[in-house]
Every structure is written in C-alpha cells, then in structure tokens.
Length: 280
Length: 360
Image (cartoon, rainbow over the protein chains, first blue to last red):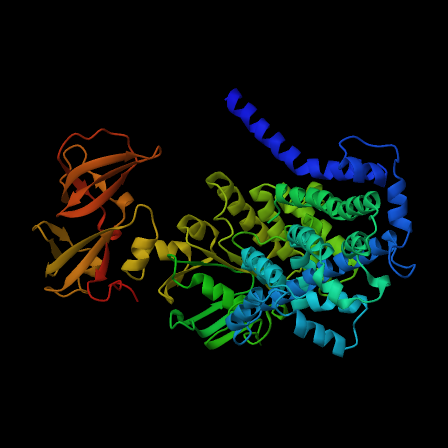
C-alpha cells in the first residue's frame, strides 16, 4: 500500500514538473537580459533584471501606434474573455430553459440544429462570419469581437442536461407559489445553476481569452489587440531582421497566463464547494 | 355546499392511457378525505388535476362553488405538499415558506407574522435560517406543510407526503398532520397507497382502482362492509381470506372440498340455492377451536409468523390459501386444526361482478 502511494506520488510529481518546468523556464528567462537569452538560451535560475521586462511589457507599445501596450491588451483580452463567458452563459441558459421547460413545436429538431453547429467550428465559418460582422459595421469593436461567438451548443447542451435533473416538483411547487416562467427562472433555476455557471465560466473564459484567429480577423486597430495577438506581434519583429525582445515577450506570455489561471483558481473553489454541499 | 366538488372528471393521457374514468366526489368543508389505491390507480392524477398540474380531459372541478378547472394552479386557492417535499434547495426555511406569499404581493410584515406563526406551530422557529439540506426528513416535511399553511388556502392537497420517511417518523408525522388539520380545519385531500395511513387519517376514505371509485365511506364502513372483493382484499393486512363456494340450500354453502358453511340468518333469503359466491372472512375473525368446541371448518396448518401482539398462522382451508391472525402465542404442531368464526363476520360477494351481496 505504501509502496503504491510512493509510486503515485512520483508519477504526480513528474506530471507537475513536466507541466510547470516550461512555465518556470519562461519566468526565469524573462528576468535575464536579451543578450543572455540569445547567447546562452533559456535560463533555469532567475537573473539580474528583476521585473524590468514586465514593466516594459505592460507599458511600452510594441506596434506602430502608442496604444497597444501590454496593459491595454490585457484589458482587451479581459473584456473579450468576460463578454465571451458571460454572454455564452446567458444565451445558453435561456436557450436550454426554452428547450426543457416549454412545449415548443419541433423542439427536438431545434435541439439537433443547435447541436449540429458543433460540426461547424469558427474556422469553418470564419469567412461568412467576417462578412456578416463587417456588413453590420462591427469591425474593430468589442461588440463585433464578442457577439458573433456567444452562441454555444456545448453550453446549451450542458445546461439542458442539468435542467433535466432538476425535479419536476420544484417547477410545480413554484407554479403553486404563483411564480411565472420568468420568476421561476430567476428565483429558482439561476440560483440552482450556480455551480454549473461557475464551471461554464471557467471553461468559456479560458476559451475566450485564448481566441486568436477571430480577433486577428476582426481588429485592424491596435487599440483592440488582445494579449494573445500581442505576443505574436512582439516576436514578429524577427521578420525585420531584428533580434526580438525575448525577455519582454516572455514576460508578456507569463502575464497573459495569469488571468486565466486566476479565474480557474478562484472559480474552482466555488465549483468544488458547490459540489460538496449538494443542495439538489 | 361542498368545499370541493368533482363532477365526473376524466383524464386520458396523450398516449391513450385512461388514468381517471369519470370520478365524482363531493367533500364537505373541513373534511379530511383520503384517496387510497394501488399504484397506477389514478389517485395521484386526481390530486394533480385538482391542483391544476394536469389538465382535465372531461368533467368539472369546483372549489367552494367556483369552477376552477380552467384556472392556473396558483389561482385555485389550494396548497400542495409533495411526496419529496419539493422545497427550494437554495432558500432558507423562512424564504421557502415566504416565497408563495411574496409572489402574491403580500406585505413584508404580514409575511413575517404568518411565517413566524406557522413556524411556531410546527416547531421550526429555531430552524428558519437553515437550508433544507440541513434539516432532517421530518423537519423538511414540516417545512413543506408550513409552506402550504402560511397561505391559508381553501384546500390542502397531500401527495403521499409520508412515503419518504422511516416507519417511526411516519407514524409521528401522521399524527401531527391529523392534529394540525383538526386545528386548522382546512379541507384536505390526502393521497396514499398505505392503508394504515388511509385508515388512521381519513374522515372519509375513497378507494380507487384503475381510475374508478370502488367505495367511499368512513374507514369503519369501508373496512367492515367492503363494497367488492377489491376493497375487501386491498384494506386489511393480512388480506381477507376468500373461498369459492356454492349455495346448496336455503341456509348452507358448500366449499370446493365438500365442507359446508352455515349461511348467516340475515343473508339466507338474499342468495338463491345453486348460486356461486365468494365467501370472505378476515384473518382476525377466524379462531381455533378450544376445549372440544365443534369446528366449523378444517384448517391444514402451514407456517406461522410471529408479530409480537399476535401470531399469523398460514395454511389452507378447502385447498385455498388462508391466514389466521391469532392473539395467543401457541405452538401448533398438528397438521389439522378446527376453525371457528362468527357468522356475522362472513362477507359474501358475487363471483362474476365481485360485488358485495348484502350491499345496498
């Protein structure tokens, strides 16, 4: 028994090291000078520059104009990630509510139509989507960045399955308590879905934060650049036969990782708490 | 004037299943009516149509002289206690009880006074801030009742509310419900498949089978004068013993194996000789012969079961399974025993229709 648990721990630690080592290399290297990185490669130990590269990453603009600073790009990413996650949760909760609790003609068909959009990821429909957004004049706007992406078959499906587990008696009790459809949704379903919402938020925020292709298509103004695009643009100076600011780029990578990690850490706590004191 | 009136209500489900077939009932104000029957007999469906959770496919429902079957559940002035309580898991006990009032635009002060009063009556005052998950089964049951009480509805509906509780708690809550109903004097309809609950709680009992009323009456009437074989065997544990018999003369019946039973005097003229009947007698009305008493029937003994207050003796009379409920703890080693009974405890049913013969 003890032996097995020792092996378990070795495997776990190996996994942790395997996942964390690259991150640590990035972090340690980001505190070195560019010369050290270029000459000696990635560094295992922290260097002499401290957090200087982070300051540059946050405050100095890398593009043609002065607006696309790291801070600005972080803000853009945050708006995109939050809008993406919250929008998806709202839309899919409403869709699932309609599908589960209302007698809609062809509900089953509608469900499969929604479900079949899983076969059409953004990459497949990016040209028509772009066309629609540009016709609506929403290029270079947060609305254009977020709204076309907030319909989610996955989240709708999860919420639908979740609603189906809620006992019918709860709806009936609410009916007797004079709660109409709207009240039932707000007073009963939404509070009961908290854990589900937290789970969806974690997933969708990270997905939204990491969007690359869509913002790249959608934004030409640097003030709308997201942090994921920013990393790329720092390294792209390579094409201009210059040595990229590796330490700054690494710092930016670390910075871009922090918010999703924070979201996961914070919401996981809620998520697990919600699972532990099961209220349903 | 009835508190609740069902006029030949019908419920046919879209799949063609006829759950309720023309049920008519009238309930007096303050009465505690129990609907009892085996699962699938339509008792819950009847309750749910009264509540408005199911749409009728025929007939009318009146509550206090007003037709309600086309109204929304919330507009019928009823309250329902569900089998699994259906408490809102994320709300405190207080909010659970207050929710229906809040949705009806009752003022905060009034809600507060009503909830506090109900909580006091149900001994929930210390638990008002708890969530349902932090309560025991009995307490949840009380919250569910409190939620119904605070609205002071015209009608309480109970849908097998005790079936999720363990036996001891069930007996306790049964008494509590009865006391509460007596105190509040609210007309109540209670659905159960448990005959003990049905017998103990009911002012009047409605026995249902396959969507039809079998008998309506006080528990005593239904138990002692069952209208048909179904009612006779459904109520009472162990069930009534039944034997096939043939009326052979004006005052005698013969069982399959030739044993004869004297017809009770008052029934002598009701059955003509040559007619086949089903004879029923309850296990507790059969006794063993004592001190050389002349046996009325021969009993082949089988297994016995100890119940504490009495003893069940299984066996056969005239080749038909039969159970005796004996108040004494005797060991019986004989293969054959003599059995006696009082003729007035015999029930006679028509073989074809299953209807009680001396009925009506």
